Length: 508
Figure 1 (tube, rainbow, N blue to C red):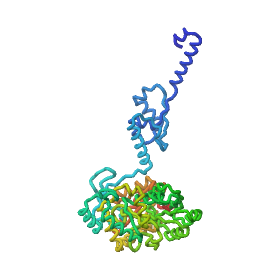
Figure 2 (figure 1 turned 45 degrees about the vertical axis):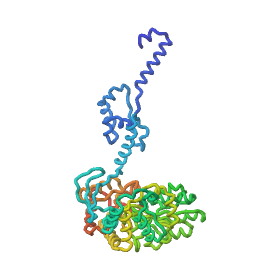
Figure 3 (figure 1 turned 180 degrees about the vertical axis):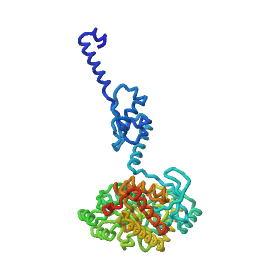
Figure 4 (figure 1 turned 90 degrees about the vertical axis):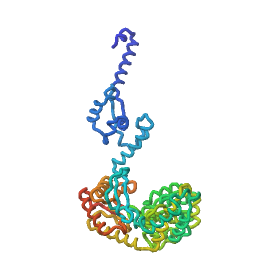
C-alpha cells in the first residue's frame, strides 16, 4: 500500500485498495484481437498463408517491436475460417476495402477455384494451333500449344468466307456501330443477319444482342414486364443468364429436376390451366453435354397451355439440316415459342440473339433494358455472323466431321478407362472431382505436352463434380486426339487421379 493510503482515513484506504486491485486486474485482463486484424496491420503476418501455431505466434510476438511494448497479455483469436471479413479492425478507408478484396481472392486461391486467364494468340488458318504467352497479365515469350476446349466448335472464326465478309464490312463501315440500335447503331448488316436468323429458325423475327448472356437475360426479364403473373418453370441445370433473367423478371419461379419430365408435369398439373406459364430450358447443356427431351417438353407445353423458351446456344450451327439446333433435328422448331442462340460459338464471331414471333421480339426490343441501353454489335461482327450462318445453313461437312471427332475421342478415352461422362452431344467431359487436382492436371498438360484445357469448377459446376471439358472439332486431326488421350492417360496416373469414380450421378 502507498504512503498516501496509510495516512488516509479508513474509508479512503478502502477505496484506494479497491482502485489498486482494479488496476492490477485490468493490467492482467487480456486484449482480445482477431487474427484477421493482425494479418491486416502486421506486414509479417500478412505473408503467413495458414493459421500459425501458438509457439510461432509467441516467437513472432517477442520479435515484434509493437507487441513488446504492450504490458497486457494479448489473446489472438483465429477468425480466418469465417466466410466474411466484416469485423476486421481497419482504420484507413483504402485498407478497409482492399483488405476485403484481397481476402476473398485469397479464399478462392486456397480452395483451388481461382481463375487464371491463358494469354493465347490463335493462328489464323491453322486452328487449333496457338501461341501461349503466360497467365493473366503475364507477357512471356510464346510457345506453341493446341487448344482442345474452344467453343468455336466448327472453326468458323477462321473460315475464309467469314474473314472475307468481315474485311469487306470494315472497309465499308469502319469498326464500331457508333451507338445503340435505336441511336444510329443499326446497319444493313444487322437487318440482314436478323432476317436470316429468323428464316433459319422458322420464326417471324429475330433480334441480335451483344451476347448470349444478354439475349437470355433481356428476353426473360422482359416477360415479367409484359406478363407479370407468368409462372417461370425452370430446369435445374439452366445457365446463369437464364437464372438472372428469371430473377429480374420478378415472376414467380419453380424449378424442376434436370431433364425430369415427370417432375415438370407435376408442376404444370398443379398450376391452373388459364395461368400464364413458361417452360425455360436448354437444348444442349454445356458442362455435361446432356440434351433435353425436346419433344416431350413440347407435348407438356401443349397439354398444359405453356409457352416454351429454349436456349440453343450450344446447338445452333451444330445440329439439324440447316444448323438451326436440336429443335430442328428433333422436328419441333414450330413448337418452340422462343429460341435464344449465340454467334460466339459454332458461328465463330460474337453476340447473341432471340428468334420468336414478331410481337414478342418487338416487346423485347421495346422493354428489355439489356438490349435498349447498350451499344449495338459492330457491323464487322454482324457481317461475319451473317456469313457464318449463311454458310452453315447449306454446308454439312463441318458438323459431320465434328461429330466424327467427338465420337472418336469418346471411344479412345473409354478404351483407357478414363472417367468419361455420358454425353450424347459434341461435348466430351472427363470427371476429376477435385478442384486442386483438376488445376494440377491442366497445368501439367500445358507445361509438359502443350495441350490447353481449362479446369471447370464451382460455381460453373457443383462442388465435387470438377472436370475437364473437351471440345474436339473438325480442324483437329485424329493424331491430335491420340496425343491428347496419351497425355491424359499418363497424367492421371502421375497425379494419382482415380479412374474408378462414379460418373452416372453427375447430371449437369
